[in-house]
Image 1 (cartoon, rainbow, N blue to C red):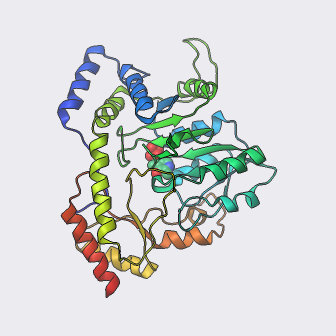
Image 2: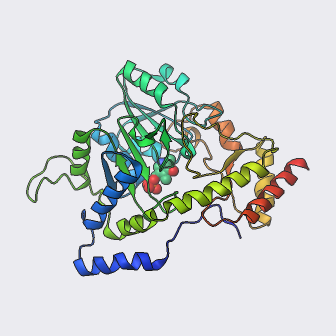
Image 3: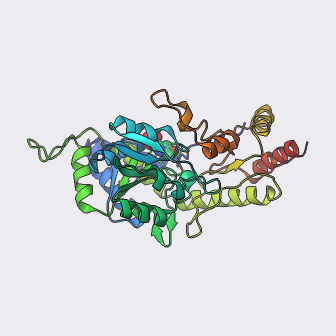
Length: 360
Ligand SMILES: *Cc1c(COP(=O)(O)O)cnc(C)c1O
C-alpha cells in the first residue's frame, strides 16, 4: 500500500530525551523552555526576526485577522484548504473570492483590483503547494489601496523568494506544523511578522490577553502550544535537511518519468526556491482523473484530490459564486504520493501506471 502522505517520525530515542526533561521540570505547557527553544531555533532556521509558536495554523489565521483589526471584506482565493476561508468568516469578515492563475495556481493579481470595494480591508492569499504568490504585484496593489496582506503559508515552510524567507512578505504570514505537513510538531502553527509591535500584541492574544498574572493587555484566547509538541518540533528540525534531500530526489524522479505526460505542472515562481511539499498534477479531464484514481486504488496507491471541490462552491455558509479557472483546475488536479521514505521504485510504478492509463 502506498499512501498519499505519511507523517515523519524521528527515531524515538531523540523524543524520549526531551520527555525526560519535561518529567524533571514538570513544566508541561504555557510557553515552557522547549517552546521558547523551538521559537529561537525556527527563527534561525527560517532567517526571520519575529515568530510565535501557536496551537495550529487555523488559530494562527484567526489571530492574524483579529490582530490586524480587519473588518468588512477580505479578498481571498477559492483554491486552498477550507481554513483559509473559514477563518475569515469566523472573525466576522466576508470572504471575496478572486480566481486563480491557471499556471501558478495562486490567486491572480490581475483580478484583484476589480474585486476591491470601499469595504475591502485586506488580501489573504495562499502560497499553494508552497509556490510563492506574486508577492510584488500583491504588495503594489495593497499599497495603492491601503490594504493589509496576510499570507497563508501553511505549505511554504522553508521557501525563499529572492533570497528572503517567504514568511517575510506581507504584513503577516502563518504556517501550519500539522502532522501531514512537510515539517511538523504533531499539531502546531507559526505566526511570522516583521512588525515587533504586532507580534507583541499577538503574544498577548495567544495567552488569554494576560499582561502579568492580574492584568490584561488585549482580548485573547488560548493559542498556546505544549512542551510535548515543541519537543516533536525540535527533534524533527534535526532531520529537516534529510527530509528535504529525500523529497527532492523523489520529485526529480517524478519529473523525469513524467516528462512526456500530457498535463499541467504548476508554474513555480521564477525567484522562488522549492520545498518539495507536494506533487500535484492537473490531468486533461475529470474523466481521466477518475480513471487514474480507480486504477491506482486497485493497485493500493492512494492519491488525493487536493484541493477539491472549489471553496467558492461547497461551503454551506457562503453563497456559491462562479470561479471558472479554480473550478476547472479543482476537477482535474490530484496530489501524487510524496513523503520522506517513498522509494524511487514506487515512484516508477506510479508513473508507469499513469502513463499507461493516459495512452490507453
Ligand atoms: C493545513 C492548512 C491550514 C490549517 O492548518 P492547521 O495547522 O491544520 O490548523 C490552513 N491553510 C492551508 C492552506 C493548509 O494546508
